Image (cartoon, rainbow, N blue to C red; front, side, top):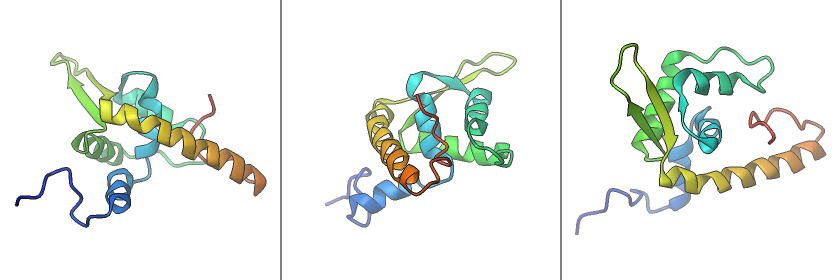
Length: 127
């Protein structure tokens, strides 16, 4: 019997999930897209917000993260086919279903990092 493309090769859903969202910026990109579609520059600006002292995000790194999120089915890339180029990224249904998970992680971090005296550094801005 052929294995479904969606089924994790290792059989462990936690490992498959970890692989899908691994990367420095993926969670933050999905979080920033929760309010609607954004263009590349808007995503990049959002990643720099709330990160005191962080280095510039290399365009190649951001492009790689966006491509991986698109391939995993969490976001969709829409190219308007105009000059100058206009491309928007938006959450898919699968990506929207992931936002509450990130909210729980964010809330956990807010509670527990504040207890440790380092309430900053989540990189996911408060609403």
